[in-house]
Each structure stands twice: as structure tokens, then as C-alpha cells.
Image 1 (cartoon, each protein chain N blue to C red):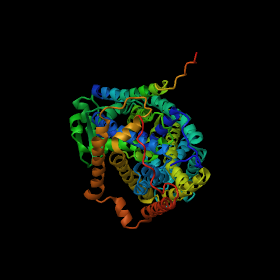
Image 2: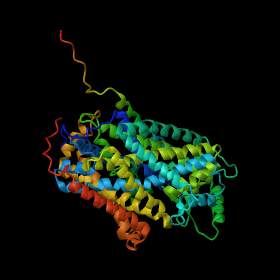
Image 3: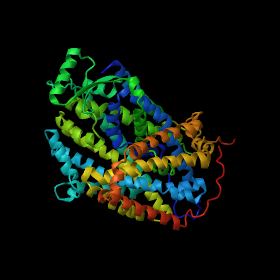
Image 4: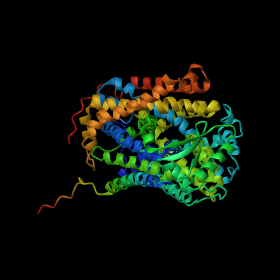
Length: 42
Length: 573
């Protein structure tokens, strides 16, 4: 395997796994527009 | 429009993770594990990956978003199949007849997909029991012919093959999961099967990467050579009659290269051995490479199958669809590039040599080359069983999604209950699948006919219809607003431009080149087979025509969606 081949492989696999990791992290995070509990009226 | 008295309650997914896994499971299938590695290696890793990722970003992701937006909007308005979705968004009855194609195509694909599931299950069983512990390529080819009955029509039912049993199990498993419904069937199954699939693939990957040089008498057959053949942007290959038979290792001296050349000449006496250099620039200048890469993205992401539209229609109105779609696409790519790309070709090259991995067709690689690879691999019986089990899971997660549009169609247009829909869809599928499994002679004629017309041509047409509907009828701005509702990621600024101009252009080019290749350059054998009236081609297509007429009748006489729906209110941001 050449250095160019190794770089191609790392970039390709890094791109897809990186994209997946970013998406899953974002998906598992609490949604930004989630309804928040209203403060009790004093 | 759905009303409060509507007998069909709104069904939604239980969780976003479940939705994502179901869509990813739907996209991950044979193409990921068997088609992609062969293509990437054939066109020389680097150049192919540039074209592949360009197509992913400019064709795959935008088209999936288009399908998700149409599907979710349609679901909100009470439609879950392509036919109802097209009508509800266009306000035109003509579109519901056009939308029948989006129900018919996945049904046709499902007919041969279940047959292929029978193959994978049978190979899983045969590997586990040791029946596939054979010695040379001829024996594996003979096993394949006997098991699938590929040497003559009806041979699979002559009693010599166990395929009908596995085929029956595959059909029953699919129908049972469909009967359980969206959340208790599809979502439940994908929630455990997709992680199991990923873990199994990782286990096999570790085994493949630790193979080293399995046979000391063939020092160039090793994992490094396999990875090089798959990923090197520039490589020198030896070809005989247009087929790659060997690769000159990068570290080889001119003397070693000459030795390899002479050995290949001895292996193919009397035939001319051509030494060819594949380079990155030369690869990128090859239009075939771009068209093939775009085509792989198109089929790999299940674009135009109608399944994403149906799945999206079960997403609640204010839930995110943009991120879920992107995550499902990324999961599909991670399996295809990150796992299959590292696994299949290196295994075949290190155990059988470059000739075995090169130019193998999807089925050739999966059911002739790989069983031989596992037979030669230490511990291959366990890993072979795991691999075919993995393929079976990947195929089932795809086939249940392929049948869901038909279920939705029958439930909404014919007002059938889920049980009635399962029975009806089951009958349609069994008749078609039986024809596919019977007419196996002349290169699996029934299977390849359905794959040509339903699995290729119809998908291009449906995707074109999606784009026309999204852009010209609904309006790109409205569609993007729908996509952005509840989105947990910001949508790219130039998305409208890409959907309006870039995506249709790429789609037009790959569809145009496919038409040119199969109709104008030389008339495809599938067209000849139909014109010659061969039963293997004619009967499955006649069955599809009967189903099409039946569906048109159902749509025409259905009291649901028979009037023009009220004008859509503009979505609130």
C-alpha cells in the first residue's frame, strides 16, 4: 500500500465515521427547542 | 385530509434514534458489502472516492432531504404512500396515478430481495454446518448452481436444493415483522439488528486485518496488498482479455515485476498480458468513473425506493428530519466505506489473489468468492457464518422497508386493516417471488429482468418525479421550509440552488448515460428477452402489469383522496 493509498483510506474512513459521530452526538443531545418547565408563579 | 373520525389513527415512531436506525437499516444492504468494494477497487480507490463523495454531497444528501420533506408533509396531511403523498402535495389527481410507480417499484424489488435473503440464510446455514467446506472454485460454483438452481428453470424445486425452505423462512420473517407494525415490528427489529450488524462487521474486520500473509508460497497475497488494491490512487495492474488478474506491488523492483509478469503469462498460456497503469488524474478524466460513483450513491442510499418517503410520513410534525436523514446517510456510508471497504477486497486478495477480487459481479463476489475466502481462512467457519448472518440481517432490514409502502398504500386507499394488508401484500409478493425463484435459468432471467426494470429504471423515474414535484409543483422554498421545521442542524445556504440545478443535472446525466448504454448504444438483453417472449422475462413483468392495473383501479375507485384536497396552508416557520 502506498502513502497516497493510506492517506486516501484514512481521509475517506475519517470523513464517514467523523460525520456519523457528529450526527449521533447531535442527535443524542437535548434538542435546543425542547419545551422548558415554566416557572411557578409566585 | 385526516379527520377526527378517521379510523386510522396517526402512527409515529417511538424515538428519533429508532427512526434513524430504521432508515439506516433500510439503506444498508447487499450493495454496501458486495457492490461498493468491487467498484472502488476496479476504478482505483482515490479517484473513485473523490467522485463518490462529490455524488454523496450533491446528489445523495439533497435527494434524501427532498424525499424526507415530501414524506413528512404528506404524513401530516394523512398520506403515507407515494401515491397519496404526490396527490396531497400537488393537489392534482394526475399525480396520484404517477405516484403508483413509487409503490410498484419497491414491490417488484421486494420480490427478488426475499429470494436473495433465502440465499444468504442458506449460505449461513451451510457454512455453519460445514457443507460449504469445499476446496476449489469449481466446487463452490457447483454448490451455487445446485443451491440456487441457476442451471435450469425450476431446478431449485427439484428436491436437490434446500433453498425453498430458507426462502419460505425469509418470507414469513418479513411478513411477521410487517404484521407487528411500524413501532413494534420495524423499529423494534432495527433497534437491535443494526447494532448487531455493526458489531458483527467489526469482529469480521478485525479478523481480516490480522490475516497477514496467510500462504507463504504466495508472498504477495497479503492484507497490505489487498488494502493497496482497494485504496491506492495509482497502481499498475496486469490484464488478460480486459480483466485484471494481478497487481504489481509498489515495493517490487523491476526484476520482481518481470517475474510476476512471466508467472501470469504462464498461468494464461497463449493470451496477451497487458500491463496497465491506473493513475489518479487518468481516473478523474474517465466519465465512466463519475457515472458509476454517482450510481453507487444513488442505489446505496435507497433513493427512489419510496421507503424513505413512507418512513418520513410517520415522523411527527415538529420533529427533526434533516439531522435524522443525514445521520442515516452517514451510518450507511460508515458501513459501506468504513467497514465493507476495509473487509471484502483485502480478505479476497490475501487469501485468493487479486484475480478473485477483481471484476467479480456483486453476486459472484458474495456467493462464489467469499465462501471460498472463508473456507481458506483460519476460523473461517465461524466468521463465514457470522458474515452471511450479517448479510441476512442487512437484507431483512431493507426488505421490510421495501414492503412498507405497499402496506401503507393498501391501508389508506383500500381501507384494509393491518392483518388484511399483510395477507394481501404477502400474496402479491409470494406469487412474484415464486416466479423469480422458478425462472433461474439463462443467468437468473426473472431476477435480472425485475432488477433492470423495477430496480433501476423505475428508481430513476421516481427520483425525477420527486424533484419535479419538489421544485416545480410544491416550490423549493416551501420544501426547504418544511425540511427546516424542527431541524436540529442549520441547513446549508446554497441548498435551494443545489436542489434546483445541481442535483437534477447529475440525475439527468446518470439516467441519460444509463439509457444510452442500454437502449441506444446496444439494445439491452432485457429488452430483447421481453420482445422474444421468453417466459422468464415475460411472466414477472406481466405480473407487475397486473398489479399496476389493480393499483390503478384501487386508486381510481377509492373514496379516499378522490377529491382535490384543500389548498395547503403555508407552513409556519
